[in-house]
Image 1 (spheres, rainbow, N blue to C red):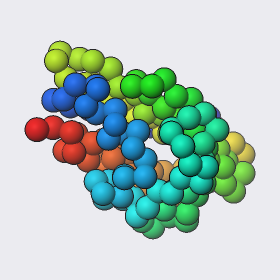
Image 2: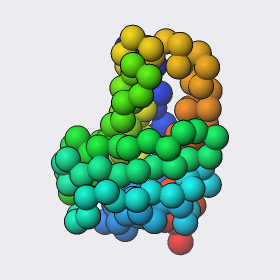
Image 3: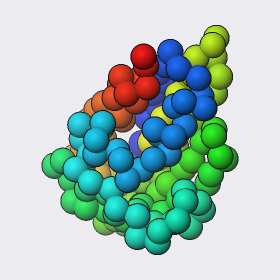
Image 4: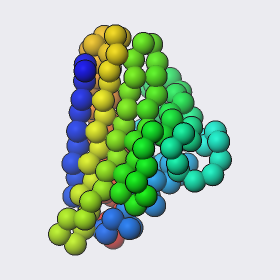
Length: 140
């Protein structure tokens, strides 16, 4: 594994309030500053196998495929490019009347070390921005 980055953020809102925001992928551009657009390519609800075209600032557009969903608690999606696989995990758990959100970005594959050296700092910054934006969007 070439790169793994994790951000854990406490949010003063219940998981059932945070989940629709986090899982509402097509609305991410409304609240995540790094996201230009997210387009569902298959229609329907968030589910394993669903594909989304994600456009983020300063990165090439990518198609992400959902690989895991536990409704109300977590989802993971992944994309492949230049000989690497990137996965992004999104976890929620109840914590002290609020929610603990954990975001995990993993970059693997033969090209991962090179990609991590070129864009690793930006990838980590994007995870931190997403976590802060989720907190901002969900807190009263």
